[in-house]
Length: 445
Image (cartoon, rainbow, N blue to C red; front, side, top):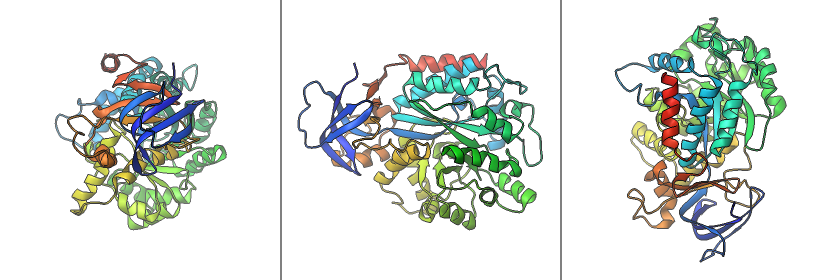
């Protein structure tokens, strides 16, 4: 039975921690928030610890989860890692991808994530032939999210070339629809549903020819859908873009109408000062993925400069080297401390907003990410009595969550007012570790 009232021992409301909060839920939304409720109301579900709005993982490649730990031997770069990633992508089918994504999204729920932005480009069968349902792979991801109990924004990704003026490689054929027009026709058959939104993505300026960028941007604009793009993750991408077009990737995207307030650039690692100003003036968002950016030796992006310029920040776990939005938030600040040798670039409250409200907004869920009347009833609870979180006073709960807690400290996750994780146990996928192990083993053959 879905509770209609939750009593929160402590809750993060409007940037401060309040004790004794009752949240009434109706039709999957927050109907009322009552403070100074010193004891649980009769029949309320009690959530001990600190309850936050649900976390939003704004950038995910679910199949990368199969690479965890297996790519940590030897040396190399992003480009050598990419070849291993392609080999996993080649083995995906709608059924195996559904099984893996269901387990990955369940792992996300256990980490307090209530919405994911799935940057999806494995569309077709190996060799590029379409499935009988051309959106079979995307539908598998949407179904997986429903079964794991979280929301999804399927960022259907246009991916047409191997580089500037180069056709797709054999590995990339299953990513490509041939043209942006064919991509738009296919993904127009995908539909929003209660737990799912359909957005768009441009894989990168190297993967979509300049003359076809506007087609993707126009598709998203007509539907008022979110549009995401990998942007300046690697210096080699910038150099190739300059050689092909005489301008940076950010300028190329701007010239073709891609940047804007519904667009989010992912990584934004290697930008010029002019790029930063351009992104900020257009209110284009920035999704940082610190655990992946350090795992792949990408570098540290200019997040503080981007935010000062006007670019809202959100967070993603990207390659899923770990799935822990609290670690992503912490890493954003700690990376900047290493880079500048100075502390205190963001408050804990600002980092939590990036991990919750601003992440949801980047995914088209503007009515999520806050514990307030009318918002979607999506929230998560962090234990304040674990070996990592015990000791600090509850009023410092935001600081404890960001700078001490991990995904292992998530005790409850609620989506649309329904418990998905209770006392650290996923209620819809009973044995998440086994589901992950089985799904990964199936891909290894």
